[in-house]
Image (cartoon, rainbow, N blue to C red; front, side):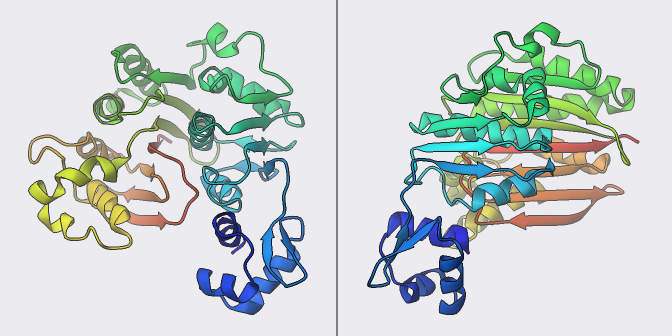
Length: 357
């Protein structure tokens, strides 16, 4: 509710509680409780009109624990749409015991680069968590972070990812996926490391996933912001290799939309549905054979999805304002988790978890 009220007042300042309640479809009592409980966020005048408190910058503090995508999305959702925020300065604070998973780091990297591209002043404060700053430096996060993003206390003078690149058996550092240049070196590196951390039986899956999905960025992204890919093996109760491929382009639904009427009329008929984009992307990853070119060519997801099913992987897809998570057991899809009304992050952000224990 907090995020919805903030987003509403950003666009329509000075509203009474009963109007706010009506516009966000909540009862007035709970809205009043939220408003009065967040006096640092909202202010009220003598006539009981509510507005956002004026502050110089928006501070988003991550939880003091391992940060997965659920925790990350909750943190940014509480601040509404960062692109439409009245704040020109946004600070992401990484507390002392905060560790950030690769998939989460990829979303944060894309978001920061997109925000500075929209003339937002962005800071990431690692003052109390040097270990995560060191991890980001080693993984190449800082190397691919837009130079306009302010890193606190400071960026390392020399990137450890450049010095140590390729020296670890359990990671592949963030590598640029440039739509206008060949990416064979990055693909080969990802495939080789994946096989090294699993076995030769995974050669086909690694080649398919990285080859198709990186090729998909090259063909469909249409973004001025360079995409990226990375890999990390996690130990623990169930060993798994996490691989991410990310771009800041049009997104799957926008790419497919113009061709649906001609090539996929049944899906085109759903275009007026409130959840049209979610249903379209779900169809892409569960049914396949959906392409803006008609039969024979696709977005590079069909074979990758089949490999995910074959090896009982978890696949997550993050789009502009929603995400999907697909899980496979014994070669069959066991569940689809949908999350809607997420804070805006443009592009397509994919993560495969392949379990190799």
